[in-house]
Image (cartoon, rainbow, N blue to C red; front, side, top):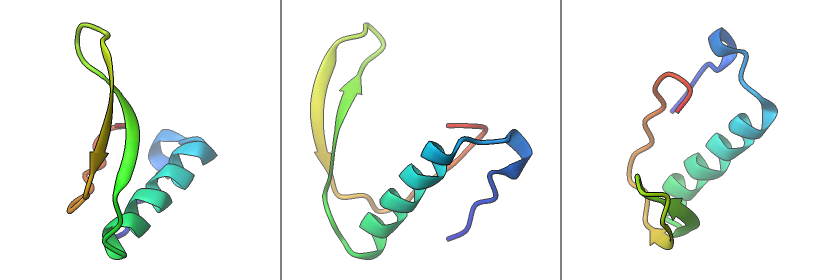
Amino acid sequence: MEVDFSPWGSQNSQRQLFTLIRNAIITNRVIKFRYYNVAGEQSYRSIEPAKLLFKDKS
């Protein structure tokens, strides 16, 4: 899995987050994060990532 962030001048924090998620996929680890829905309501999620899609800064 490889992504080139350079066309968008991405921030270092995005590259670090990508690395963390990629490593979680490779090592079959659970990721926990805060999630906001369209209405702005917050919840906490735990997931087992299987695939990472990076598209236009997201």
